[in-house]
Amino acid sequence: MHDVAIVGAGPAGMAGALQLARAGLSVVVIDEQARAGGQIFRRPPEEFGVRHGQYRPYGWARDLIEDFEEHPLIETRFRQTVFGILRDPEGQISLAVSDGQRGTRIKARRVLLATGAYDMPVAFPGWTLPGVMTAGAVQSLLKSQKLLAGRQIVVAGSHPIQLILAAQLLEAGADLAAIALARDLPGFLEMARTLPAIPGNVSIFTEALRAMAVIARHRVPLLRRTLISAVEQTGEGPLRISLRKVDAQWRPVGTAREFEADVLALGYGFTPSTELARQAGCALSWHSAGGGWTVQHDDNFRTGVQEIFVAGEQTGVAGAGRAHAEGLVAGQAIAHSLGVGADPLEVNRAQALLKSSERFAGVMQTMFEPNRTALADLSHHSATVICRCEEITSGQLEDALTCNPFLTSASAAKLECRTGMGVCQGRYCEGTVAARIAMHHNTQIAQAGHFNAHLPVKPVPLGAYGDLDH
Ligand SMILES: Cc1cc2nc3c(=O)[nH]c(=O)nc-3n(C[C@H](O)[C@H](O)[C@H](O)COP(=O)(O)OP(=O)(O)OC[C@H]3O[C@@H](n4cnc5c(N)ncnc54)[C@H](O)[C@@H]3O)c2cc1C
Image 1 (cartoon, helix red, strand yellow):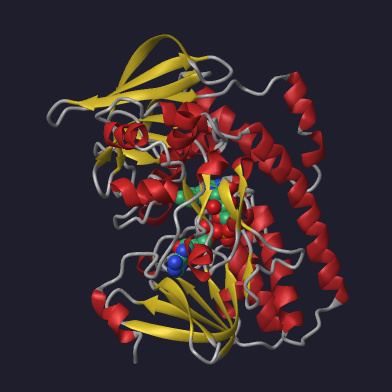
Image 2 (cartoon, helix red, strand yellow):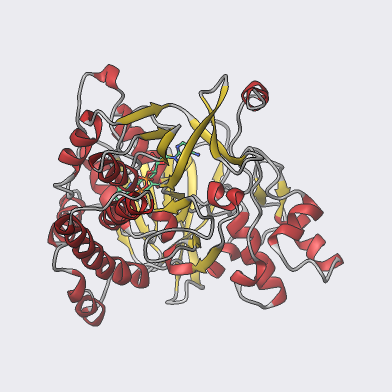
C-alpha cells in the first residue's frame, strides 16, 4: 500500500508529489498521458528523443519536471487511466486503474485528485464535422507530435489562450484566416483592474503581449465581438465557417461573415475534470467563472471525503501558477494528515505563491467568464446534435422539456432522453443540456445541477473492470 496515490501529473500533481516525497512518504502518480507535464507542459513522447518541451512563460516548469522525474520515492504509472475510486468492506480506499487492457487496484492511505480540466465543448450547427476541433486538441497535436491540425485555420473563442495558440500556430507555419473573439479587447478601465494581478505574474502578461505582436506581424484579421454561428462542408471541401458580430452580451447583431479553412479551433473556456471526485462522493459547487462545477474543499484542500484531497483546475480553472501553488499546499496538508510536519519556510513559500496566483486567477476569471447562455443558444436549431455519443438532437431535448414540465435537472434529462449516457459520460453535453434546461424554465444554470458519475468514469475494456474482483 502507498501512503498517497495522486491522479494527474500536471503542475498540481507534480508539486503535490514532490512535497510528499520530500517528507519521506511513498507516492504513486497515475496519468493517462505518456509523460509528466499535464495539459500545459505537454511534451513529445520519449521516442522523439527530447526531454523538454516549450514551457514559456513558466520558468519554474523545467525544474519541477526534472525534480519530479528524478525523485526516488515517486513511482509513476503513465498511459494508465483511473476509472473509479472504490472503498472495500473494511473501509480501505483504492483506485481502479486500467492500462488499456487489464485492470488493477491501487491502495493508498490518501488520494490527491489533480485531474485538471478539459476544453469547454460548445454545440452549434456543424460542430461535429471533422476539422472542428477544440483549441486544446489543436495545441496538443502541436506540442506532443509537432503536427499542425491543418494548413488554414480559423481560431474562435473568448479565452485569452486563443491568442497564445494563434501565435504558436503562426510560428509553426500555419495560415490563420481569422481570429474571432467573442468579447472586445480589454479597455482602459478593465486593464486598470488587472494591476493587482501583475506582481508575481509579469512573465504571463509579457507572453500575452508577445503573442499579440506575432499576430500583428502576420497581419491576421482579429475580429472582436464575433461569435461562431455555424459550420458547413460539402464533400471533401474546406469548412465554411460562419462568424457573426455580437453585442456586449454576445447577442447576434448583423449578418454572418463566412471564412474557409481546414480547421476551426474553438476555445471558449475550460471545464474542471471532476468525474472522479463526483463518483467518490465529493460535493461540488457551482462557480461559473471558475469553469462550472468545482470540487468543494477546506483551506487544506481536503474534500468532504476524509481521505481525498484536490488541487489544480478542479477547484476552479485558474492557470498553471495556481495549480502549482495548490499542489504544494495540498501536499503539505496531506503529509500533515499522515503525521509528518512540513518545513515552516516551505509552508510560507507555498502560501505566498498561492496568494499571488489567486490574485491573478480572480482577475482572469472575471474578465474572461464565458457567456454560457449565449453559447447554449447556438444549439437551438432542432437538428443540431447536443449529445454526440447518443446522437440526441436539440429538437429531442426541447420536445422532452415541453412534454414534461417536471424535467428540471440535467440528471432528469439524462434519464428521459439519454443525453450524457454515452462513452464520454456527459463531458461533451452536460453544460449545454444544463444551460438549455435553465433557458427553458427561465432559471439559473446551477439549478439544473450536474450529471452523477458512476464507475467506470472513463471507457475501459470490460476485462479491466472484471479484474477488479481479484
Ligand atoms: C488541452 C489543454 C491545453 C492547455 N494549454 C494551456 C496553455 O498553453 N497555457 C495555459 O496557461 N494553460 C493551458 N491550459 C490550462 C491548463 O489546464 C492549466 O493551466 C494547468 O495545466 C492546470 O494544471 P493541473 O495540474 O490542474 O492539471 P493538468 O495540467 O490538466 O493535469 C491533469 C492531468 O491529469 C490527467 N488525468 C485526468 N484524469 C485522469 C484519469 N482519470 N486517469 C489518469 N490521468 C488523468 C491528465 O492526463 C493530465 O495530465 C490547457 C488546458 C487544456 C485542457
